[in-house]
Image 1: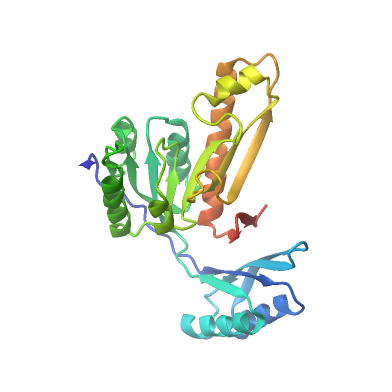
Image 2: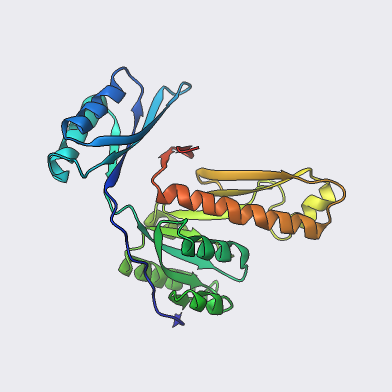
Amino acid sequence: MTSLASASVTKVPHISHAVLRVSGPDKKGVIAAFTQVLSGHGCNILSSEQHTDTASSRFFQRSAFDISTMLTDKVTLSNGISEVAKRLNMKAEITWPPLRKKVAIFVSKYEHCFWELLLRHRAGELPCDIVCVISNHPDLASITQMFGIRYEVFKITKDTKAEQETKEIELLNSLNVDLIVLARYMQIVSDNFCSTFPHRIINIHHSFLPAFIGSKPYHRAFERGVKLIGATAHYATADLDEGPIIEQDVKRINHKDSVEDLIAKGRILEKEVLVRAVKKHLQEELIVEGNKCIVFGD
């Protein structure tokens, strides 16, 4: 491991709202039950979204509520929510302020997604603290240093992968990292790594999968004459690129587009889709259900 810069953490602003996410079997009175608990504790509900999956009869809800007017403490409210959830056989999770998370970005040599994350973060569009950048190459260290962020190099080979990943996990845990973003990180993370951070690793790739697996997918897509290119952001799991999908987008192309055009347009999609997915996670707008994501706020 090679350290090339020191950490820089943005000051966390005061935030007075919390987020309640609920999921479970759909039944009458669910919305009213949780609303009554919040209002009974003096919490003003700022926004609330619900969704019912009619195929599975599953109910999902996300509510943001103001805690500055709360009449009790967090423990008392949490206990009240837990009692209602248990009675209704629901899963309920409260995220208390500050909602700002600590983020680590994994990179290799591709710059486009990395630049986009750093610039959007600097502009205040991503409510998080980027506490470190981890790479298997030193190439992007100079970019990271421009933003005053810690940069660590873990040189991974087939023989050193397990050992290096263990060191990465130790570093991430020591920094209390909440979210890991694979910004075109060209290494397969292990099952152990994914299980250590369940639904806390976001990956980005082109949307040709399961077709055109491997290197030079845009070249093979060009040869095949595809009419759409796209990008997919998802949670990384042991099943490689088959984790719950958070965000996707596509763009039409035609015979006038060269391979270079496809790559350029694909990179634009990749960085935009990745930023949207990261933002959804940071704002607690996702509920993972099996191998799919319920995405609120759209």
